[in-house]
Image (cartoon, rainbow, N blue to C red; front, side, top):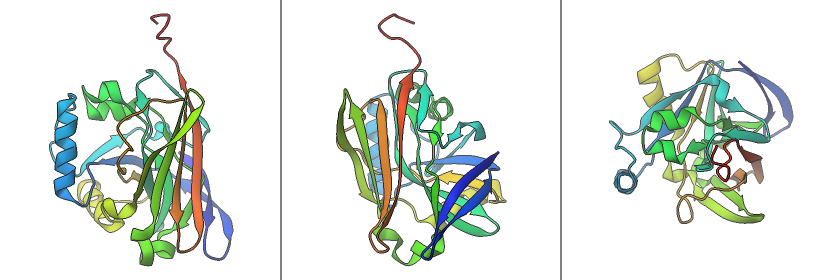
Length: 230
């Protein structure tokens, strides 16, 4: 599967072709293990099964990755999660912006299945990891959700709450070997008060040092008609 990005460097922006070999989503990837455990216990209370190990790697179909501005989902209980994406090409690491859109009803039955049923949006802009590596922990993730026409801040947090890029790659390489062509979703930052289900999701990755952002947004179309019972 081929993807087209715009590579934004300190000097300029150029077209960047990427051949996807595998899509992975990382779960329970916080640096603070105690907070990760607290989150696991919270999820258990609403019926989400405890993971066998942390962090957990969830393989996803390559076909789920999309750069479109509209996604279709089966159920109305789905929501996005702003994350950074790690892309590996030619031995070099690149950073993107993505949303691990997930079916929350199915999540209580099976996290791996909940990861498979929704498209995974990714922004069209990427950065070289080397350009942000020296100030990585200062980068910030944010998302906004629109419900009934009203937009509100949904998530905000620095990437220093998530495992470092090198640590994520070490975990993935130990399990999968060759990293070439991989797109890896990092795990997310906390919501501002729990899951919210809306019809539009906006999200960004801000680099305050270089004064730039990656931004993406998408609308959410629910295929099942709850009012009609189908």
